[in-house]
Amino acid sequence: MKKTLNIGLLGFGAMGKTHAFSVASLPFYFEGLDFSAKYAAVCTSRIETAKSASEKYSLGYATDKEDDIICDNAIDVVDICTPNINHYETAKKAILAGKHVLCEKPLAVTAAQAAELEGLAADAFAKNGQVCGIVFNNRHLAAIRRAKEIIDEGKLGRILTFDFRYYHNSCIDPERTVGWKQDKDICGAGTLFDLGSHIVDLCRYLCGEFDEVYAKEQIAFPEHKRADGSLWQTNADEAVYMTATLKCGAVGSLVASKITVGENDGLTFSVYGTDGAIKFDLMEPDWLHFYDANAVGGNYGGYKGFTKIECVGRYPAPSGKFPSPKAPNGWLRGHIESMYAYLSAVSEGREASPSFADGARVQEVLEAAQKSHLCGKAVKIR
Ligand SMILES: NC(=O)c1ccc[n+]([C@@H]2O[C@H](COP(=O)([O-])OP(=O)(O)OC[C@H]3O[C@@H](n4cnc5c(N)ncnc54)[C@H](O)[C@@H]3O)[C@@H](O)[C@H]2O)c1
Image (cartoon, rainbow, N blue to C red; front, side, top):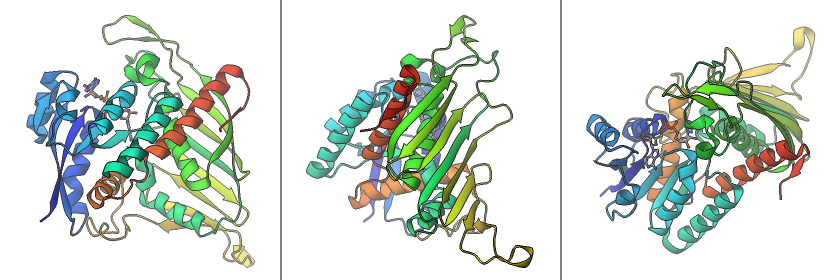
């Protein structure tokens, strides 16, 4: 008999909806799925929004009290899609209540909180087999998985330098009303946590652990309006510029910005080694560009030059059959693969990847960047 995982969803904004879509999609995307998963409850800050989400998307019972879900014996997995400031308390409570926990990024708002969650998650896995995972969805795109394979095969040689960027344009309009992502009391940090967490994770995942970071934050539009028309003095960074040194000696840059006009979901990166290079652009997620420095040159270039690898939907089994592997990917595909990676780990009793430990390492780098901005010097990461 197939195991059914009952999930309690906390938060039904952009990410709650994305997770609900991903869980509903699993049987279509993964052949012979040996578990089933469904949302058995949904919690938002207002009971009306919870009820409407539950009715519209069949998410089980509705509540505006997260403890109803955390203390419910019928719930196996607590899925945290609430604003950043809530993650630590909620994840801690859910782990201590014996749940498996999936948490959106960033894991917490301080490195100390993230380290505590990492420890609790490790104990809970060792004692009770509870599986805790964090959502770094971009890791699960086909082209990024291929990038990881190429780097792990040694095809780039020694990594010398890198350049990770995540650009949005959402802070560029001073007339646009602010939400919690511009309020430091709720988000903990602005673009650094929101987009910066993704690129710090990818850099670490592909190139290795961070050693030191120097960072400068920017607020270009200090005044915004709140939804009620009152004036809001922005206290969360709109852009952050980092120079980082990794333990392997590579030095490079990471820039996260929401004041880059014309950008949509502009996540790009390049990694350069002694023997090759890779480049990726989220707006064209089907392709990974690979340069082999050992390819033979010659007239008209011989075989030298960047190769465009057709990663498209060529995922290994049990994924990759639907839609046809030649069909292009989108941002949602990364979230569907991310959800599968986490829930299959729960179903099989394996540790999740990315884990709370990954979330905690990323949080250390983010906090070092905040400290660096304040002191004007590079900050070492333990
Ligand atoms: N991985 C990604 O691609 C990605 C993208 C965007 C956001 N995120 C992360 O997802 C999280 C949620 O972001 P979002 O954009 O969905 O936010 P959102 O503002 O769209 O939705 C937040 C939801 O949380 C609910 N909520 C707020 N406080 C609550 C509480 N105390 N108890 C229960 N529910 C509560 C709100 O009612 C709302 O439904 C954030 O941590 C963010 O960093 C991840």
